[in-house]
Image 1 (cartoon, rainbow, N blue to C red):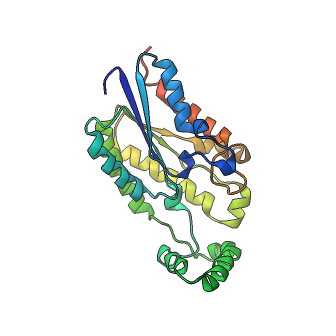
Image 2 (cartoon, rainbow, N blue to C red):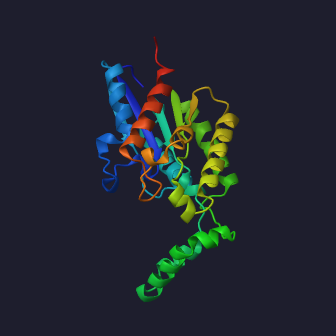
Amino acid sequence: MSDKRLMIRVYGDSLGMPRAASDVRFDQTYAELFCAWLRTVRPNAQVHLYNRSQGGASIRKLFDEYQMDSIYFGKPGGDILVLQLGIVDCAPRPIPGWLKLLIGHLPSPFRTPIVKLLHQFRPNLLRMGCRWRTTSRGAFTRLLKKWLQRASADFTRIHVVSVMPTTPEIEAHSPGLSESAESCNCDIQEAIRATGAANIQFIDAHRIAAQNPAQFIDASDGHHLTAEGHRLLGELLIQNEKRFLSP
C-alpha cells in the first residue's frame, strides 16, 4: 500500500460487530477504536477499514469471504489483517449440525418443544459426552495454517485474536465451553508457529479477560463483548501495532 494510504481488513464472527443488546455502538467496536488510533498516529495517511465480521461465521466461511475479497483487492491485500475467530468452530453442541438443520425445518408444533427440551437438557447432554463441533480441531488448524501462509505474503502484519472466555453461568449451562476455548487458542498458536512468519502476532485477550469475565463479556449470553471488552481488544491491537511503528 502507498505511504498515503493504509488499509485494515478484519475477518471475525459476531464479536466484531456492534450489538444493540449489549449497548455497543458501531464506533465502540474494537476495529473502529483501532482504526481511530491509527488515524491519530498516521495523520498524513488515509486509513481505511474493511470490517468483514459476521454473525455465526465459521473459519471456513470467513476464509471463503477472504479469498473472494482478495480477488477485488489484488496484491498486496492490505497493510494490516485482523483475524478474530474460533468460537463458532469449537463451541461444544449437544447435537450434530445436520440434526439441528433437520429440526429447524420441522413444522413449529414439532420444532418448538424439541428446541425447548434441548435447551433444558443441554448441560446433561454435554456432560454425558454428546458433543459436536462445527469444525474439528484438525480441520481448524489446517485451514488457519493455509490462511496465514497466504496472508503473510500479502500483508505487512497480521494480528490474530484469541478466543475469548465465557462466564461461569454460561459454562454451567454449556459444560466444556471453557475447555474448548482454551484448546482452540492452543490450535491458533500452533498454526502461527507452523507458519513461521515474523509478521504474525497472537493477541492473548483470553488471558486478561478470564481474570474478570463480567467486565468484558456480556452476562446475558456469556459470549459477546461489552463496550469494555471492545476497549480491551482495541488496546491490545494498539499495543501490538506499536511494535511495527517506526520510532
